[in-house]
Picture 1 (spheres, each protein chain N blue to C red):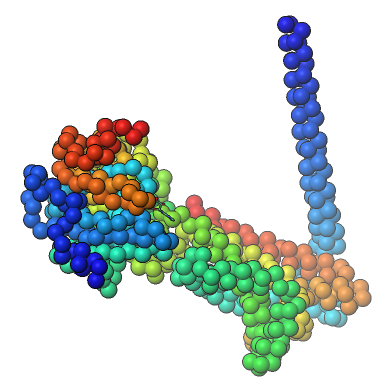
Picture 2: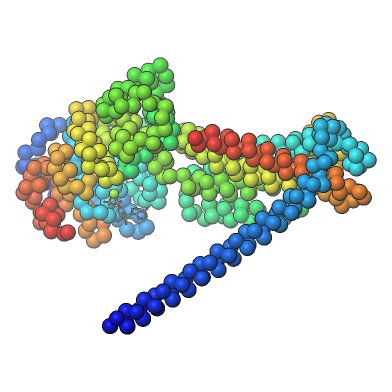
Amino acid sequence: MSERRHLNRHHRRAGSDRMGRADRLIYLCFLMVVSLVFLTYGKVIFDIASQGIGQINLSYLTDAPRQSGRAGGVFPILVSTVLVLAIAVAVALPTSLAIALYVTEYLAQGSALSSLFRSSMLILASVPSIAFGLFGSSFFAQFLGLGTSLLTGGLTLAVMIIPICAFAFVEVFRLLPTGYRTGAYALGAGKARFILCVMIPTCTAEIITVVLLGTGRALAETAALLFTSGYSDRMPESLLDPGRVLSIHIYDLAMSIPGGDRMAAASAVLLIGLFLLISSVGLYFSKKAHP
Amino acid sequence: MNIISRLSEPKPAAAGHTAQVVPCPAGPPVLEARAIRVGLAGRDIIRDVNLSLQPNEILAIIGPSGCGKSTFVSTLNRMIHHTLPTAKVEGEIWLNGGLVFPSSASAADLRCKVAMVFQRPNPFPFSIRMNMEFALKANGDRYRPGYADKIEQALRSVNLWDRLKDRMNDVATRLSGGEQQRLCIARALLSDPDVILFDEPCSALDPVSCTAIETLIQDLKQRCSVIIVTHNLAQARRVSDRCAMFWLRDGSGEVIETGPTDRIMTAPNHEITRAYINGEFC
Ligand SMILES: Nc1ncnc2c1ncn2[C@@H]1O[C@H](COP(=O)(O)OP(=O)(O)O)[C@@H](O)[C@H]1O
Ligand SMILES: [Mg+2]
């Protein structure tokens, strides 16, 4: 009897030991993957920063580029970048909100049209950006006669991120607690009041997050802008002038300007910095919306 | 056609206990549902429901889960179009002598007169004041200077004013469950409704909050009529004047008996009601 108990205990101990080993093995695997990833990204950032940060000073931010960007600054490029992004967000935010509200609030849930909308948004979100670039140059630049300009670039980026934002907004609105909806309608609110006074305010943080996601995607875009906003590095004088955005500047310096590597790295640091800035502003507002 | 012909007949068994003494003065009803049928995906969720509600009366709707109690009350203020958008509703609903369903009049106006409080307290995640102001605006009240008084009155009638008057800017969802539910009742009172529908208002609450809500419902009787859906027979006995027993027959909910609460609880006419009251289905 005592022998059996002993055996039993032995067995259990062995079992738990094996579990412990498996646990440790899995933990080590995770640790390895995570450190590998961290090291890789760390190296990328370190390389860019160590090459680029030395070039960045006040005159780099305020001067125009010289010798195709090998010297001088990036001021006109920053201006073009901000303008293209502003146009893209100004067009994409209301449009994608409207699409998402239409799908969630006006189409019957689970209806054929609603699922058609959702799947086409998903497909459009994964279309390669070069396709949007070609579309933008043939539709906005040529057909609408906007030419190679900031406006064409901004609109093309808007078309590119609208499906991404609309799809994400639909998911956000679907997750709204049903109690808010029934509560508002039971108090006699109409659809417009529910949308404007309950839905949008309670989803502000999520809406900002989604817009940031889209902005980040737009900020990093080169292929869609090459044929639409162009690569002239002069200061744009109106929205109908062409202008070079930061990502195209990096691409150009790295690929076609001999000796442009260090300046490309500097612009990349700037791009990362700009993204961090946009994200933290967004985060600040979303924190404010959800205290 | 079918409904009309059914309406012109004398009312069937559901309203057949006229011989009993009704505790409320039997005048014209505030709210009357005639031959309500709700179909969903080829099945009747409820069928041929006839119920009326007297002024200042509390009607309890009792019956087991899934027999269509929530579905029925949500037809009364047309909330069913939001909760079950594909459901097909037939029948007539009369409010103060006017036909409100089927009707081309706005559902929003109806919901100001027939308010609703849900099982889960559902304040918006805004401040207490904004929750109340939302309700006022939704009622179409544009006189902003009057808001503060109306909000105070409504919160007083749910015994929350003293506790909340200095916390009007706190987020409503941080209140306790019972306080949230009372806030929701206060919010519903702002439109000065004729009828308030309570769908199991206590099932998400602790017993103490539950007692507070029950007391409140009885106070509400002074100013409007109440329909309360409840699983809890003791609660029905405590708060209601009249009971309607729902039961599932051939997969559809029907009213099998209505009558004064005292009689339903002590001497029900219907065999199933008697068994249900005595807990024989447990
Ligand atoms: N969203 C829904 N989809 C399909 N059927 C539903 C839905 N909601 C309710 N039902 C059906 O309606 C019946 C009655 O539900 P309900 O009115 O909630 O009952 P009760 O409130 O009496 O518990 C249920 O048996 C269920 O089958
Ligand atoms: Mg229910």
